[in-house]
Image (cartoon, rainbow, N blue to C red; front, side):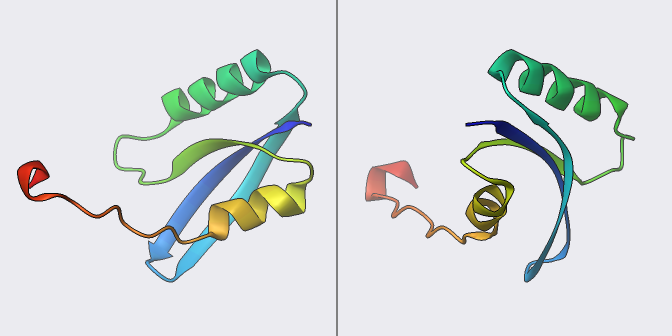
Length: 78
């Protein structure tokens, strides 16, 4: 399964814009690409670069669009 490198912009909490940069067969290649994309970002750029391991591009995009529940904080964690 390939590793997909996405640049994610989120203009508001309801919308995520996913921009596929590249699909890589090996993790080290995907990691280097993600690091170089992060290094090229401007200081005020709020875009996020993520690596997703998935069987297809569609599955990777679905995983990124999932909304996860916030973990329940215990009293001592507050």
